[in-house]
Length: 287
Ligand code: NDP
Image (cartoon, rainbow, N blue to C red):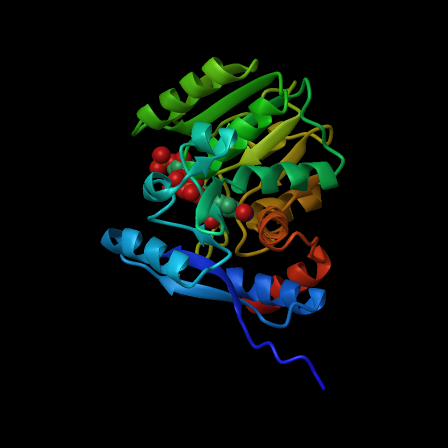
């Protein structure tokens, strides 16, 4: 007789708006390829003032874990029993693991970024990076690069609000050995010639503004640099297309997203998913 066990293993994402979050597509493909037939990834619309109820629901349903996206990444921290060191520094959690009611929070955005660099043969040790943007993604990326031993980070952000950039510089100076500086972005920015890694951590190029490119002097990017985009949709941004035309080594934000999602699956299931399957599912969903 066949084993009769129809219990679902639940994970998912809490956010708002969340309907267009492609997490489910990537995760379902990974679960299927792993043969995890009863693992379900739920896309859950959670009001800003209902997060506490949602976390109680997560525990009541014995969900194995959850991703948090806008607007819950910071607010969720008060409900957790333990938070990783880097997530504390970043000041935001995007992945929660539920161990029998005990909630652990991690931030896998910057870790997915680091895995993307690694899979492209880029080691940050002793290197110099320029990071465009100072929002949540930039913060996660800078903290992970700082903890991994990068030598130098230049954060470039628009002038309207210096506080985000100043705060990030202070965190990095206090907690990492990196030389860090903040540059006002008030015109086409030229990447310094001794830069090794250039990161677009802004939302420039994100769907539907797919032809937008960050305001940088493209000729200042040379083939001895590596360009990493964070934009996951489209999978090939105008910036990445331009880099490929110019023969500049580069990696897409889709790769970072897949690595981040793969890490989440590993934290929840203990299994390593097939990233090619996940990437293919994402590309199909976005075209
Ligand atoms: P935030 O809103 O926190 O930050 C956005 C950043 O982009 C800010 O620094 C903002 O500058 C800057 N920015 C926006 N528009 C422009 C512009 N026209 N010119 C220059 N700078 C601009 O968002 P997040 O950091 O959370 O997300 C940023 C991007 O990263 C999003 O596209 C998101 O999809 C992507 N992301 C990708 C992940 C992945 O796994 N691939 C994971 C997480 C995020 P200012 O302060 O001046 O407004």
